[in-house]
Image (cartoon, rainbow, N blue to C red):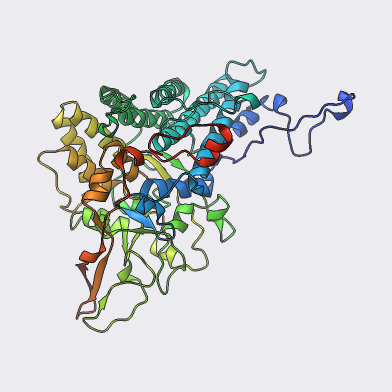
Length: 529
């Protein structure tokens, strides 16, 4: 179970006053603490470090994470905003703006802490704590920069709190952003604790989280979908393997045993296979997902069907359902078959082409919810389920990819099969592979990590957006036919094949910089946009 650390969104940019009577006017508002005296006790440092994670709780930030990570793919769609699914979105979309601003807000908070704490002699403060919170700030700064660079490409690197005349920073090369991220993480991991030393304060940055992000940044730089860009460096696969091996060597993580579904329950939080999670908790209000207490992913993925909860934006595709091997327990744990729960009535043999208002017929994402939760009409927007950011199986598959790309097929096969072995539990499916290809690894990532925000970036960085979504296309829907025994059988609906004909690989491998930043900050737009 999680143990929450205190949440405090640190007030930045406190007002200052000038007057002929400084002694009279140099006061602090009730409830506020002047910035120049804030970082003076251990408690102050802990509060400041808590604020580093505040953007991760914002529901608009989580909304964007799922939309940008899943809805621009063959795994699912946002049924009320098809622009991402159809690739007709543009630089004015509000989720792009929110994502940009919350990431830079997190960077500002990190920079303020680093500026006021790193290398500063603070009387009475625990020096180990001082080094730890600076390391947390560098991890956070790297994490927010990474979220920006993988989505927007060339973005400004911000390494200090900006003055007013610095607000028009130019875009940095992707290679410069990734080098900055790597440097921050290398410095951070030296002073971050291992997971077992957190004392239950889960959600804080750890040495393992820094290493996982180093793996991610290295894999991005080596990925073939960027082979024509200035930052491409296939040699970074070796760095990714080195960082992954350092993470494995910590002895802090192992693949979770038991039912795959249990990983995504409250009891499965911060488990042996979890490297970094955003911590959420049940709110006393019934709209916790909107107040940054509960996980907004629950609200987004809630099924829409008669007799169940009345809202749900994200729908999985039939193509995702088919991606799982028959008998793979991860299918049942990842995708809800709405035909089992929907309040619909059919005559024997009657064909159903749509269940209620579900665009993908009868499939929804299952992560972050349970049957009991989505059947609870009075509490469907409130969930304490944590957001899984880095899991060990994700890093195992990154490691397998890097191993295969550097000529070590045996190691790649070993780590893919470790993930598949955990997935099947005591069953027989998915069976071990006898050989492995890069497509096998890509496929394993899709089913193991579905609805965790990885699919779009995996397609973009490997240069497969057009092939998978435009050339091949995919099945959005299937028909349901009532069996004479009262069950349901599935039949493919050929008319439901969708092709995202608006995709241009060289353009859509990054999202456009928000138009407001182009207009107000003087940034030039990303190539292709």
